[in-house]
Length: 367
Image 1 (cartoon, rainbow, N blue to C red):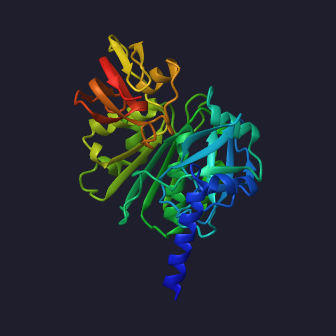
Image 2: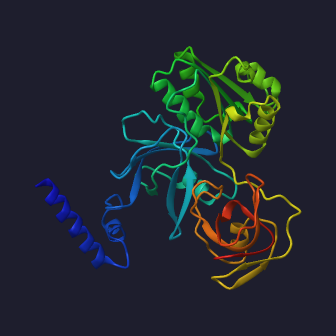
Image 3: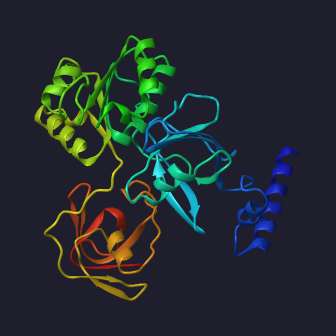
């Protein structure tokens, strides 16, 4: 009987959606109640806090379609600004083991960041945003290692904060070192929460580095002395069960990778980018042709997404950092370089991510 009821409900929904075409039924429902959806995921802001002068922490209550997340993953958050929906990727900072059904996001207001600036200035309880299911492979393994090093810088703290909270909530007893780099003490988003965790759990060591003001637990920027001071077991071949997780700005990411490469333990490092990668100079030249729109532009060396926008086009995008795949398009001809990995590709008729693909010479892309 229950099966028959579900079948009838699905058929009824299909009929209603057919009548609502060309729009989805959720486009009509949101006119009555933005949180009433059939397929789309939405979330309502239930609380707002400003932990630092240039960041905002939002607590969201998602609709029933939300399936939760694993610590370290990201979600796409969409807000309507001046009648246009804009989407960005943010990593939940709360524990994945929490059963309250809420999502905690901390967003730093980046200069020129349309969505981050909007949320910092205008987010308030009651605001409804669109939401995706959680995605990403930056996650802890099912079997947790006995030694874990969590490294972050600036607003890259959120995914590793989620990892830390999840580990302690799950009763992990192995050694955890939380190493965070920030300009000054007042710029630490989760200072009180981190201090409380370190005081409550004897297996957690908190190491804060203030790169501008000094006065932290270590001085300067990440180097081999920092690694040796906080996690000597990473480079110890007898410590077979150790892993490191890193998220931060490009300078920190590069520095940590170099040190891990120097110690020949790069296989122990797992990373998540949170800042758009910069295109390398010196590879510009030629012409970029956007076939669907019939627009051609001189190759500036920037990513194809940036060049498309500079040419007056509006391709779909989300994270702008090579994570969400919203900007995937087809490269018809030419060579492109992945600005995250440095790898080049000249295979025709291949799907590429516009936000992390820079043309090398003449390139034709289906936009």
